[in-house]
Structures are given as structure tokens and as C-alpha cells.
Length: 221
Image (tube, rainbow, N blue to C red; front, side, top):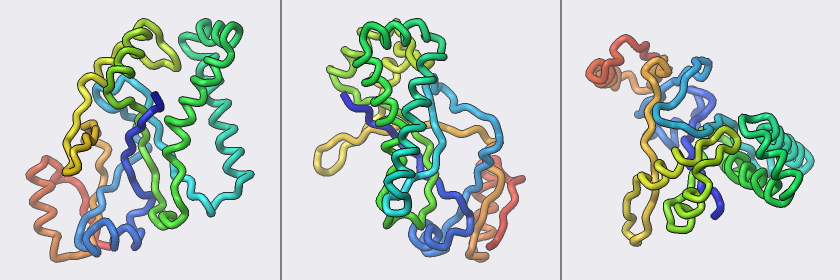
């Protein structure tokens, strides 16, 4: 019953040589620059999404990590107690405090745990879009069905039930199913394209024009 969040991995800098070498075909790929200052929402996404930088173990002290988790813990509690169902939250806190605490723990597992990575990856300077979800199982579907009339932390449980039922998946060679979700950013978020190999310029121009992004600036770095 633990949350199984999805992540979309981004990096902070277009000139991160580590990323060019390891994720862009040794400098022959492209970087798509997204403008995070634009206000946008994902289509058909009636649940919470968080954009946060990763925390690298070994690059942060235990005290700093505790402080980060403590802050998020209180953010989760505050969100419940001031949200659209605050009466329900206060009722839980008064009559079922252990349930209230478990809900905040689920919030931490959904939004804080996915940010923590080993320090060997720190050069990625990763920022993650985090989408909490559940794998579709009979137990999860039964639980969501029971609570579909509730609304906690501004999440519509009935909408989430439909999304979990419709979860996309593919089968690995091992026979295990890997679940995923397709989401689409609005066109306006793509601002520039960066390349290192100038021999790629005409090819990238043609691809962008074909996809309707012919007006985007291509920068060679």
C-alpha cells in the first residue's frame, strides 16, 4: 500500500558536461530548455505535482536532512489542516491521530523520499517532477473505491481511481510489468534548444520545423 511515485528527471544547467557526456550521446544529442517560470498545468492531471531538486546523501549533513524532512512534514500537516477538507482533517487529528500521522507519512514517502539519491549522482544536478501514484492492484483499487467520496489534500479520490485503473504498462523480458504515464507539456514551455555538434544544426532545424517549433532558437555551446 506504499505510494509508488513517478518521476520526470531534469537537470539544472544546459552546460552540464557530465550530462552531455552520459545522457546526450557524448555531446551529439540535444538539450531542450524548459521555462519553469511559466505558469502551466499538465492536461488531465487532477492531482498534485511537485517540482523539487534532488538531495544527495553525503552532500548534506544529517542535521540538514532532518530539517528538510521536518519542514516537509509540517507542510503536509498544514496542507491538510487548511485545505478544502480541513474539517475532516481536524476530525481525524482529534479522533484518529494515528491515521492522521500515517497520512502525513504517506505524503513524505510520495514527495520527499523520491528526492533522495546517492551522492555518486550529484553531478547530474537533478531536478525532479514528482507525481505520486499507486500501482493498479486489487487491494489499491478496493481502498480507493472505499474513499472515492473523500477529498484529502485537495486530491479527488474518484479521479485518482480512474487514473489508476487506466494506468499504462509494458512487460519487461523478465515478465515483470513496468507502469508509466504519458503527460504532455504545453508548447510554450519549450524555449530553446542547445547543441554541441554544429553538424547537427540542419537536422535539428528540420525536426523542430516538422514538429511545429520552427521559431525556437537553437544555440550551439
